[in-house]
Length: 264
Image 1 (spheres, rainbow, N blue to C red):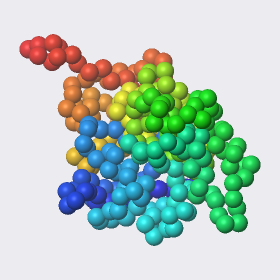
Image 2 (image 1 turned 90 degrees about the vertical axis):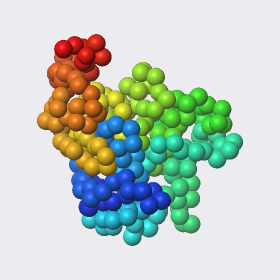
Image 3 (image 1 turned 180 degrees about the vertical axis):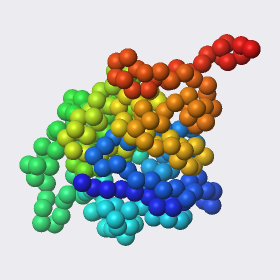
Image 4 (image 1 turned 60 degrees about the vertical axis):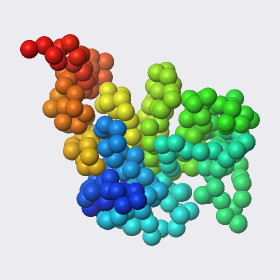
């Protein structure tokens, strides 16, 4: 099973440091949710792990090897990535976009195959966008486009999926569908890492929580072990009660309303 970790990782943009000296090991075979306030470095970390951003310092290791020293095709065949705001080529249909997820598996000797066709069909069906396959991506709603991009990542058929805010633009029903899908993929053997904004959803679906603030990891571990009122206030600056979800047994965060916070 593919292993991914970061050692003393430093990341930034145009001379501005965002992540500094970060050490992180992604638990193989688990769902890891990266949480934290806006601009804390979550997406930057994911870009670094996905080899979309070269480190200023430190390394990202894929099965013990520097990911930046591996051939691009090899990385793409082993790590599926959904960036935060992907851009599709003008006029491309949903089906053709998802089919691009099979490119890492193509060679001069191995062209498009029945297995590729099946992988694309399975990815479209799993994300509920089969009926959109012939429609241009730029004509779809935000939620539809998001599901098509997730389908592309699934079509890569990798052991490891890195997803930056996969529930963005989705209504509650489709958020649950996507998170249930990630659970199914994990059960089938995939390691999943997802940046999520909804802390309660992260606690409900993830085996591991990575809580970030100001470019650093403040806590990592199973939700029941790391998510408490003190962590919520430290990471998000919000006072809250944390109780046990009566349905799942996972932490349930109940932010205090403003009227309660202002009461002497």
